[in-house]
Image (cartoon, rainbow, N blue to C red):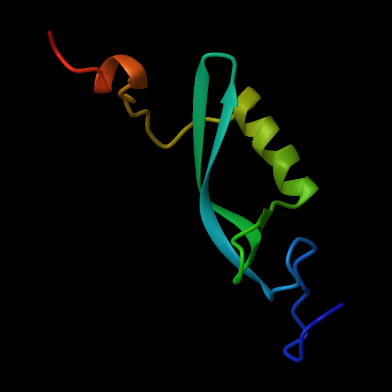
Length: 87
């Protein structure tokens, strides 16, 4: 199914799906990888995101062999400990 603008409809809610780019997070073991400007399709109604299989394969290849543009230190919080009242 498509809309009048020839955009596909969301399989989850039936809303319009549009192409855009996002920052995608991929976790592997204890490592978190961020990918900027990843091409995706996103539902304008419910926000469901679809990443093409070929793009996911490219992400796998980048994790294995790619050279990142930079490395950032990421703060890590243990939520229950962080919000527990101090005694």
